[in-house]
Length: 395
Ligand SMILES: *Cc1c(COP(=O)(O)O)cnc(C)c1O
Image 1 (cartoon, rainbow, N blue to C red):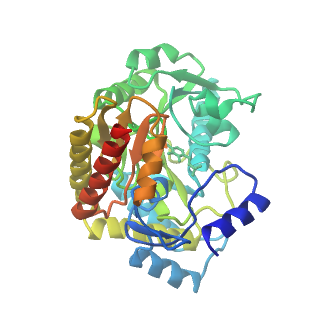
Image 2: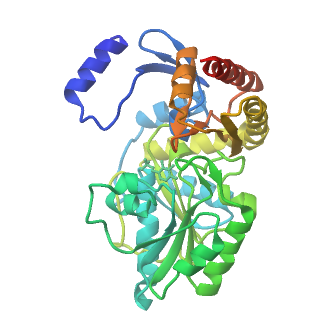
Image 3: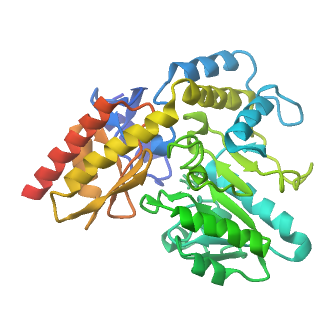
């Protein structure tokens, strides 16, 4: 099938929640191909999902072998892979226990439920989240998401959420009441436009939560699994949250999410409190274990730091040449080029030139290449951005 045929079939049979243009049919590393045979450099990576690249042989092998052995058993039974994956995540996080689920929103739902159950004895239930945040599309997580655009039309929204300004400790302090159970924060606002949390803000939040005896929760759905050059984004500021969520990069495309809870709250959930049918299937865990092992074996945290710095430097050089580009910002391989106006024309032109990226928060071109990206690929992408910017500037 070519792109036109696929699009026609989709328009006829799918609820139109998405508006795709390309039909991608094959991937390898940082490259993808569409149904018409065009090749692209993938600096979107399934929105920070393909952290070890498309079809990494380790992940492919793990999934193929596990699929032929045992795919699913239900959490009514042990499966040998789930605790092995949890052990690896705990080691990376410096302690804690895991609950496995299927998506980012579901992992965040877990955090919210954990905070409520933890606070229920004292009548604490409210979760403070940040304006311009993104936490998912279920009713609770779109309410946690501090952006009206995702909430509009879905009232009544669940109660129990309050909002504060990101990177503003005073605002968070002011939002706390006797009902507050937790503060939930992204360590880099991804969907919000690649805005890193100041280390001082996270350190201040940790102290504030300790003082007020409330939980600090981090949404690491996009920032986790090496994306920022650390296993988890909070590690850059040396703090540890009471619990955090993971999803996107964890299975490299095989759906799996997780909630990781520090010892203080790791045993709050008891049998009957929380569950999900597909959470932590042998198949999902096999994929995730292969991802974590690959990140370690290939030194991808180091590569992420180095390639992230190279990409940021290249984009800053481009930004310096045009007064309609504000600058470049980011952490690790979460990088944004901030324009004065909509980033859509640049994103579309880049796509035409063979580079996939994302226009976010209206005027930010967001780049999230696989953590396996090479210097050559970064330079290649930067050259395409430079070329596209020059063309747009001439118009
Ligand atoms: C993508 C994302 C989510 C939602 O994850 P889903 O798997 O789409 O439910 C939540 N939080 C952050 C920070 C994200 O980037």
